Length: 401
Image (cartoon, rainbow, N blue to C red; front, side):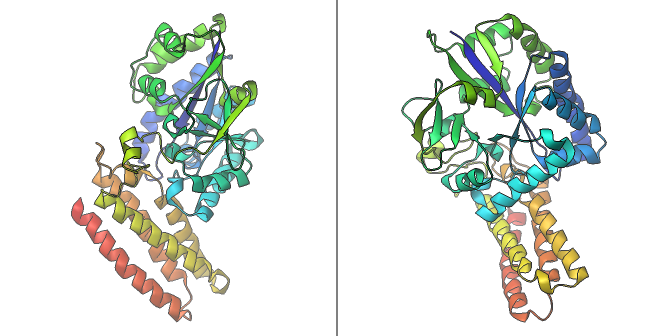
């Protein structure tokens, strides 16, 4: 019996992150992980890097990280996944924005990583899925999508076969939530403890386990995790026959297709009691959290203003087109998921991060309004009404901090 397992590491920093934090994470996590892979040529991971982080790495002079990822990918040690560039919670935005975020993520990462960036799989930010996002993922040509284990709707957990989406045939893989969480929180931190945990089924047939977590777990959140766990694991694996490290794409190729399903709307932070109360995205859109409601309202207003401005793009002069481009850029940045996460109070709360995200949304709307030709009086009047409601929502957010 062999347990085939994969690490899917997700690395990302919000577009409003400050430079000293990125520097710290590069030194503690990204660079040591790449070094560990480089020093152990048989080690491999699946990697999601949101393209906003790729740009930040370039902007702050960490080209060695970009080059290191490219080299490892060319050696087959990194299996890329697609995602949304600015890390929005995809189920909370309309399909045109979902498509846009995925497309610009691909375009930006291909700019930096070249043709080696050709992901087969898709990592939804925060593993947040709903039925509404699968058509866009399928349309853009991805072969598989990963979700949290809680999303599985079959009576059995897929571990000997690959489940498929009932409607569009996308291959579905699910994170083993319990083992992933225990790794992330340093509860499994030796090679033998890890191997024994992977062999939890204690059966005579082969099966697979997919572990997914923030890449920053290793070295940044858990300081000793690379030196004391990841490197010893990479060193030991070539000499073991009971557990085999793969990429997620390799697991999908190895195991047969099985039962079809429609996964449950959820995220990798969703708990069973959240599903019981019909709140699939509790850290980003909890109807019982007034901050979440106003944040979502602000995002929807900003989306409306930018989409309205886009309709008048052909009638804009060069200055107005420049304002529209600014609006579009601020909106892309402003829909990142972190501002809602920091408003969840479960237990995370940061007025600073909430305000940073709110500022991007306001800048998007202001630039969108200013881009509209003065002859379009009806649309400008509509913008005025939207702005009045935005002010109310903004004041509620500020007053609640």
